[in-house]
Structures are given as structure tokens and as C-alpha cells.
Length: 122
Image (cartoon, rainbow, N blue to C red; front, side):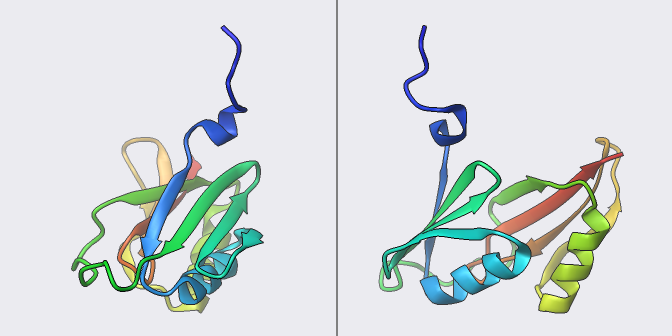
């Protein structure tokens, strides 16, 4: 069976955000690339993958006290991304550490309460 779309476009996460400019700046500071900016809708890239930011300020409840979901990003040097997240002042949901599931990782919280987990295989 032939693929309908490339695998990197098959499953894309779209985040509803309160302020797309704030969210875009947060993700760009972490290393995401802006691929398209249509004002209230931004497409970010990480290698060949996409992340959509869709501003829905009027429709969203307050951010939850802890992340309800994580975006996981695998990187070659998680400690470098930990330093970047610390410099950004991002709230930490889980500090960097070696995990029993085979990753060294950490989770920070984005401006809308979503977790962003960076990890490297042990």
C-alpha cells in the first residue's frame, strides 16, 4: 500500500495556544524553526517534523497546574538543551536525569502548560 503523505506529515501535533507570538518565541528559543507564520497560525519545524501553533485565546481555560501532555524531542546532546532551557527560564516539570526507561531527559513547561521533553538515549 502506497503512503498517502510522507511519514513526517502523517501525524502532526497542533497546539491551541493563548498567544501565538509568545509560544512561537518559546519554541524558537528551544531550537524549532519557523516554517510558516500566518499571524494566528504558525508552523514550526524540527528536522522534517512539524508542530502547529493555533491561537485560540478566547476559547482556552487557564493552563493546568501540571502538563496534561508532553511533546518529546530526541536530541544527540540533551545536556546542551537542558542548558538552553535553563537560560530561557522555562518552568521545570522534571529535572534532567537518567531514567530507567533508557533515556537521559528532562521536561519543561511551555507558556500554555504543555510539557516539552528533551531526551537522549543512554
